[in-house]
Length: 460
Image (cartoon, rainbow, N blue to C red; front, side):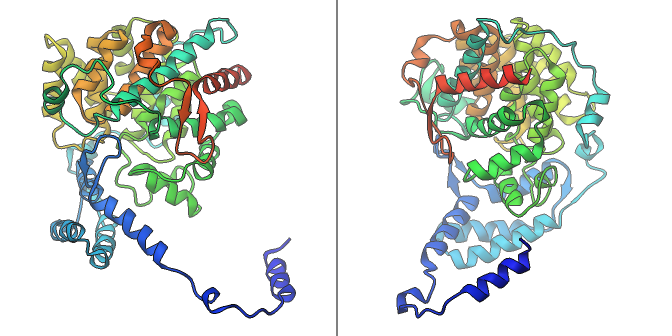
């Protein structure tokens, strides 16, 4: 049916009715409350899992400046906006917020900034041409023991995210003072977080399309299944809903495109490409470009390759060196993971190594990819494949702990299977898997593992 035909039929088939008084107007109060709620969160909020304070409005400016963009005068807007948020002056804050978004859109790259002098790849093809992937190693996905490896990878994620949600947004010093060694759940654990949510969206698309899956396929799952996101994912979701598909969904009005949101999604791409670094990287790229660009994409590639290669080696120091070497040295991401690896090799313990990294990347937000990539490398090196030790280190580093722990522990689970994970991490959670997705709002981890194995076997 043509659009004009449908509109014609609506008009010609409509019968006049008389509405009651209460039916004649829209109730705008609910919409106003919802708008004010999300505006407040953008300017002044606390992380749901840990209570850590944050301001995305401030972070948006910070992120653009981190990557070498000149942001027009904004200091007065930030000050006034934060004050308006504090006193609940929503009318004024809406206007300030619009002004700030206008300022952010007017920002331009500074060609003389060090970040702008580094390399950012425009496509996977450009990236693949610049690197030498490790040779594929065949993994028998039909072997009886393969589901145990997938179970280990998923349970590593679930445990890491459950531990980390209580710790994110704080420094190593504050966490040590509050909790000491991270060797337990700080509170009763749950699975309600965004770390797994976006990976489930990818998995559904992959299960449907196999290796022919595209960024647009995954984006469709985002808008169909995921009601909300944060930072880069929130921008991308809004863009897709307006018909802006990848890679443009990551680029339009998105100051957070080099934050951790893609880096936290890499493990699933490694799981479905066991033993193949190149295929894991390709899948990670198409997933990442929905919401991220440049170094933000490399974060997801790093974690995907790490997990894919963990299926064929359990030498985690060698795996760390190999994956770091894959990241081109002339990119900022490559420089970050090399710095972290050098800090680890030259330090007597993880705390010393992390202190060097923390000082090096102090100008970056705790949700940015860089300090968290450094924390991952430190934990990989000193944890050396031990599940509990790696978790203690990645938890002790602070910053975006749930994202980091989920990805690194997924690699250990992929390498060693369920034997690597003590029951004390699993039993408090049980088999229930609760999400904030439209579907599945509630499923089981065993069903997720079975679905993943089936999708991998069919894709082969």
